[in-house]
Image 1: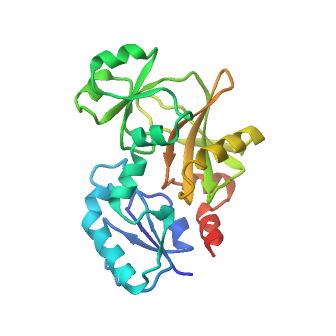
Image 2: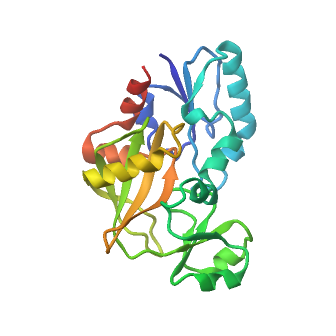
Length: 257
């Protein structure tokens, strides 16, 4: 099978993906020559201004159109072949509604009076990734109406990035450092998941069976409860590979063969 990935320069997983797919880097003036592909994976990167899928909508639509003309049955990873589908899924408020019961209490920030409903509010950009767009500063969120969420802060004991590939939970998770005022979330090490954690992640992704690969940002609180912070359909896994030797691109594309 032949695979194609569309992504941007900051994607840390490019080299790992290149072992199994042709990669078009959208912000690097791509010289794309259409040919037959069995799958297309449109990766989404929202952490860097100007490099989100919306910024390359014309190029993406053109490439998809060319590929469909050659192979009308090309398989889109996650069943997402348009920018609109990607942005809709990555919107954290849509995720809150889709994965009801797995997320902490969350509201769309529309009125400062909403804050009173939260004991310790944290503010999250509706569309962002990799720890970007998260603040405790109400003034930052107030500047963009309807673009931020209010979420109940958790008393977190441990943060995990759990990977799920085509419905199967990878048995090893990345352990994340907690977010600080000046530092984004980063991988610090890895560990094996418990049966309870694997079952929790599996139940979550049953709500979105079309997602072929996901990175679930999951928190275990000090009372032993589990909560989901975000589901990323284009997880970076270069540091995970360095930590574990496991290339998730291999697992994804092997499962498609």
